Length: 500
Image (cartoon, rainbow, N blue to C red; front, side, top):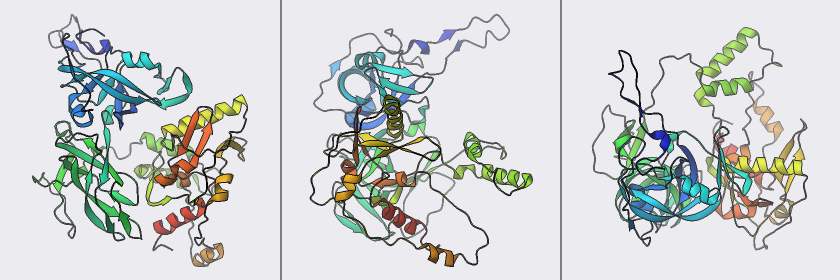
């Protein structure tokens, strides 16, 4: 990296064109070739930039003022000016030491603190070489040279680059009745600065959901709106995690209408202009740009149309085309990623029994590779995470009907000490009696339905399993637990309430 630019690929390139247009074209700026990956900066989760062409690691002054370590000394920067990809100076202030957790390891690294830098942090090749990061741009994967079996997703989509996930924790004890909303006070962790800053709030998927909103955090405190979407009253405890806050940049946001929440007892309509208000609580409405071509087929449409198999159906060719056209018209109803529900969460009650830790089963090199691939996939999808748990169950591969192998964890020992739930399972004859006058029947199958139910944080360590690459735990309800069917049936009863 030169002293005047960040990535060498971002320099402005002079164009010598001997044509009538030569006086109209002065410079050409190639697009930025950044990659993003999920990491932790000072124990706060976020999305960081990767730039192999930069010789320095840079952190935003704006973000550092919020998540920076107060005890970390600032060493003044005395070197030459540093220019960013756009050609302007990033205004380096000094050097600070930052704790960065990336690719499963934590490292303290010296970074440049820059005032004119909008992203959270840019990781240069100084840090990449230090820990041995390997990038596969074609496959959008990243791994450590010493751990090639643990691969992490990277992306070139900069729409969420620089995002922070600062936890918001409740400060009070209260009870919210079923299907009711309330305002509660929350605070950021003690490591977060007490400066005043604007933040966009996103709810985490729990029984009590925080509304997506814009807030002003003052002295680490703010007020958010929450809703109880369950049929039972929910008790809110101090320190309970309700949402995440991200630094809100109003200068770069031209698609959000900011509206004050005036009353919980009335329904607010969307005005045509932005309403000014000094209140701290806001709701934000995203405005999507729609295409003029209603018949255009999106990539999402092509994905589920490819999986649609109608060879064994009784539909005519004309009916098949009508069905596909209908699916394309409403393609936004389909999602490629697994969702997460907030209506129920699964708990593993083992009473006062001691933690169960079993040795892993011996597997062949071929099966070992299959397990590594599945673990990497589940890590990238947020289904599992590395942990340090007193529990450990072995992994097994079970054959499917098509001859392939299904990844599973042997929870039989854990199930043996789990207190069983007693929840009524519907009888098939009662269901058939209710359908006696029906003419049309539709079968809906949830994709990995159990993984769409979150595992209670107090039970996640109990759902841990061991592999040669380390110890991992489930963040969602895994297959093979003794009470999983009753939890899933409870969810279905809530979802289909009033339709039975």
